[in-house]
Length: 294
Image 1 (cartoon, one colour):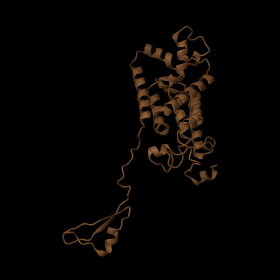
Image 2 (cartoon, one colour; image 1 turned 45 degrees about the vertical axis):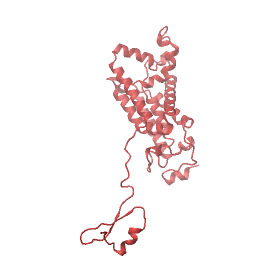
Image 3 (cartoon, one colour; image 1 turned 30 degrees about the vertical axis):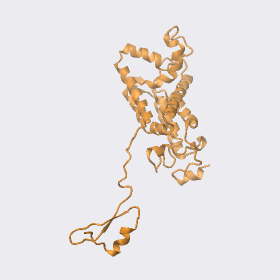
Image 4 (tube, one colour; image 1 turned 45 degrees about the horizontal axis):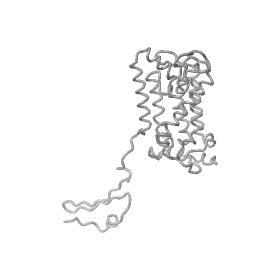
């Protein structure tokens, strides 16, 4: 037999109201109905802390697979692979590889890109992966696979070009995806600090965070947090550029000019690849930014 409900509680049982759930319970002796307040978001499924889009996952798989294959190769064969696919400024305008396969038109063209698929060791590829996880994920979700790959390729080529201009005729090979990673970081700065984006104080879900309207280039260069990020990024590259780091037990200089080339290209070329329609003025997180928006 249904339990009787106290008339004073009837409005809470009958009236619909989001966030309030009326719970009528019947126990021996006829206890009164109770209302249970609960947050509508308490039982909502939580988004994983880190989810990788398929395009980025595939890229990382390729990078690690290439490196593991190289690790299994004999030293002599790996050196030949580097000569064929690493970016070597001396390949252009010198006779270092004269009358050999490495001086052919093929290596002179494809090494502008293929150098980015090679890494010195696991720590090298690991650092690039760590930077790609937040910035590459957001960019891959925003661009889609094809645009993402083309953009990464374009910034890698720009990095090689910057290194060639600053190290003409240098024999030391350049390898690593750092220029392309730098390009992804720069591109992400165009939308990373907008309300709801992945570096915003009011972050939405991963998909929504990647699709917030981007700042126009000149407006982005006046954004306080973008400027702070640029200052830190250039300072880090300057520190590593002046000194050297240990890679594979050898003292190796960082090709910071290639990093800058990829970064500048990413910042400038972003609009050419961005499929998200501009949504007017960005709505920043803090009122100071709103005052400076134009």
